[in-house]
Length: 233
Ligand code: DC
Image (tube, rainbow, N blue to C red; front, side):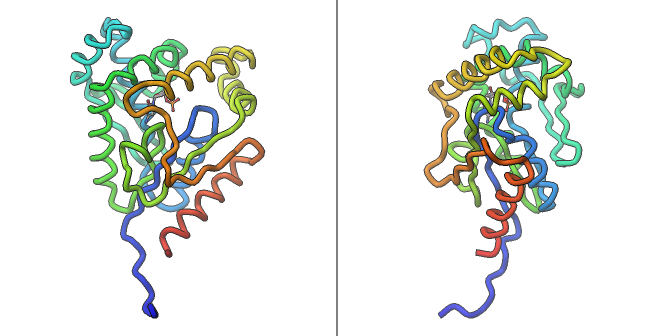
């Protein structure tokens, strides 16, 4: 019989995947902040490399050109959940990576295997360097980037709920029309799920959380509890 208390692991790696509009970013940041962990938004990195391609005249539909250029931009992510940052070649890219132009181009760029290989390596080294552990959010974190993560979460929500959340986020900036937001989301999900290299997918050992009927606070609480359970297991 095991009587001695087990030592809690020094670090904890949490992978949070799922389509857009499921509350991934808000949840991941809040969970990391509550637990004193680092935070990495891998979607921001795919957006950053896409922005660089667009800014440097690379035809994003020419996979060979994207592959050749993929080594060039220097992408640096700041992992403080209270103030995450993203820089490309030393310049702050937080604003430009959220434009409709980048959103419309990111699936094509992120389908290129060389882009994925480059960013996967960067993401793994960032996770390895996080002293207390890290929450990493994306589409292929549990399946490909960090298959040995201590906890894998897959967030889902109905397309209607996701479109409503996204429209709220975009209000005053770009599209506010719910139907077109829903259409764009579904199209991007189909591209992200259908690509050959590490598509958006739930890992077999991931815990699926349907956020359709939950508040953000409830989702955060649920994930924090799951992490605490892992830490003390
Ligand atoms: O999370 P987001 O919407 O900012 O992500 C932008 C795009 O980046 C998304 O359409 C798919 C891609 N992505 C990816 O292919 N793999 C990841 N790990 C994260 C994002």
